[in-house]
Length: 403
Image 1: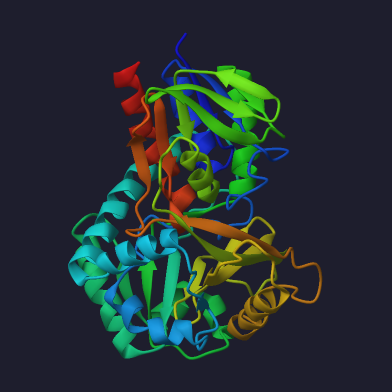
Image 2 (image 1 turned 135 degrees about the vertical axis):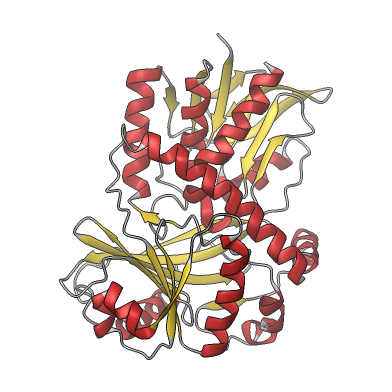
C-alpha cells in the first residue's frame, strides 16, 4: 500500500487524509494536540461555509485604510509592523496583490475552489454529522457606497457562479426577521443563498471516527513535529518528540505552524498569522436564522444547533496567538451592539482566539514543495473549511501522479 503521513489534524489535514484514504493511500495523521481540531483555527472559527464570500484580503480598500489600521482607529482590525525580514517580504507581496486586477483575480480563483469544495462537502455531509445548516448568508451594509461596491463585485462573482443578490433593507428584513432587532442602521444587504454553516470542531471529531473505522487511518496525537528529515533534496522522514518516522511521502497541513516546520526542510512559506476571536453562547428566539455579517464592524453571527457563534477581529501583531482580554471584550461589546437579544451574553461565552494562516494573495498553497516527497496544503487564511475538500482533492491528484 502507498503510505503517506499527514502533518496536522485540523480541518485541512483531516480533509487531506479523507481524500487520500479514499484513493487507496495508507494514511497516518500526526498532531501535537490531544485530539482533532484542538490546537488551531478549526476549533472556534466563524462556523461558516462561505462559498460565495471569497473576497481576497489584499485589495485597494485595504491599502487605503492602512493608516487607520496602523493607528488603531478601527476596532475590528489592528496592524502592528513586525521588524523582521519574513514580515517585510510577506507585506511587500501583500501590497503587490492589492491592485484591483489582482484582488479580482484572487477572489475569483478562491471562488472556483469554494464551488469545488461545496460539492465535496455535500457528499461527506451524508456520512459525518456537524450541525450542518443550509440557511444562506447575509452581509449587511451601512452605507450606499459600500452596498454599491458590493453590487459591482457580486456581479463579477455571479459570472463565475456565485448566485448572490442585492437586497433592499425591507427585502432583507423580510428574509431575515431577526433584523428587526439589529442594533444599528443599514441600507441594504448582499444575500448568498447557497452559503452554509456548521460546527467545524464537531466535523473534525466525527471525520476522525469515520477515517478510523472505514479507512483504517492511524492517528498520533500529542506528538510534536520537530523537523523534516531530508537527504539530497528528498524526504526521508519526520522527526518527532518520540523519534523519527521514516517516510517517502508527507503532507504539510499545519496551518500557521506550517511555516516553522517547513523551514526545517529549507522551505520558506509566505504565510503570516492573522489573529481572530470568537465566542459561542446559547441562542435566543431573537437570533438570526441565516448567517449574518455586519460588514462595517467585521463581525459574523452564525447558528450552530442551539448555540450561536460570533466571530470577528483581525490582528496582525508580533505577539499573535496570545489571548488578549481587551480585544475579546471589544468583540463582546461589538456583538451586543449589533444583536443585543441574539443570546445570553452574560453567561458562559466560550471565549476563544486563534490564528488564520494568511498568504499575500489569500489563496492556499497546494502541491509539490522543493523537497521531493513533501507536499503542501496550507495557507488557507479564514477559508480553511470553505476550501478544505477542494484543496484536498487537488493535493491527492498530485500525490497520485507521483505515487
